Length: 433
Image 1 (cartoon, rainbow, N blue to C red):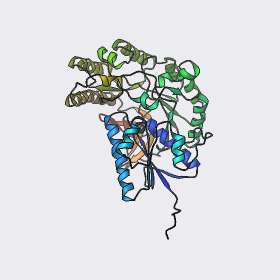
Image 2 (image 1 turned 90 degrees about the vertical axis):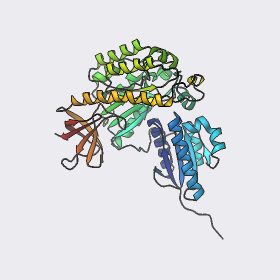
Image 3 (image 1 turned 45 degrees about the horizontal axis):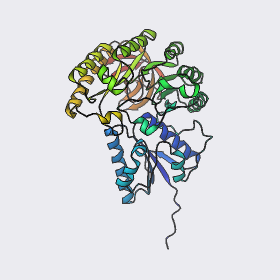
């Protein structure tokens, strides 16, 4: 007679979507490890947990395809169980259960204790800051808040992540200390909205206070700010940026558009004049600052005139870093009530035009760096190059500094001074000095 197999489960966590999801997967893996479970990230395992993204159409498609891929593996017998968690599952659980019933269980974004239970583990409250990091050892994401209170018309995040909820400063400091003890040198601060940090807990915008505490953590050398909302930005953060060398002269501030009719329809709570003034104030306060932004083209009702306004403004502002997305019509958002009236090919053409302008700006700004020396962190070796970044570049999304590995040796995970010898549109080439 067959006896029940006593083989030990190996849990494979698969992460899709943004850095917030990376963080959530790391917390899940930390909890599983503390429960003495064998856990891997995107490697072979007989139990699979897919942490999905449900933000825009492409991300949803990737999530669904990944679920189907692992369900097929389950049907073929190479995987025993498939669990799905994250934003897509939060947003479309009933639909998913109906359409892909062969998933063992679906969980939402705040279902961690129940997910752990399904994996035969207990949620351990005492594990503040314990994560199994999946990024290169020199940097890690630090999520300082969850959810969002902004009413942006195009965005489904509040549907999936709920209201804004800040994490207390002392918990974040404790988490940063644990990361530093593991050799992390750079913290990338993330949230749906950094600008709002602290309003719920401290009754004031408290990002500057948080930064003042984080810079005291020994071993942390760079702190980088991601996803700040323009309306109500706490300007005292710029004072800390100037005073504290550990706070990178870098700000990611997604602006989405600039034409007033579109900003109004997007419910961004600002205007072209106010946004332009804010950016001028940033540059006046921190002349060294690199500003990264993201834009959306093809939003409902975006006329050729609106697009031309956006184009001229991108040329005028000369952002150091810029990404551009085509509008995605998301159900249950306010903008879903509008007609998605910009044809897909026009959306794609507009995005390509914006990126063409940006690529020229980036090339020109990069040429100015040739001959200069920058302190770089070396993330990895890839092909014939060591790949590093300056303080003006965030991992995965920004420019990189390439060092010829045939001629030079640099230590991965360490800082080194690099003299820039050549520059392309988005990458710099240099040699250690």
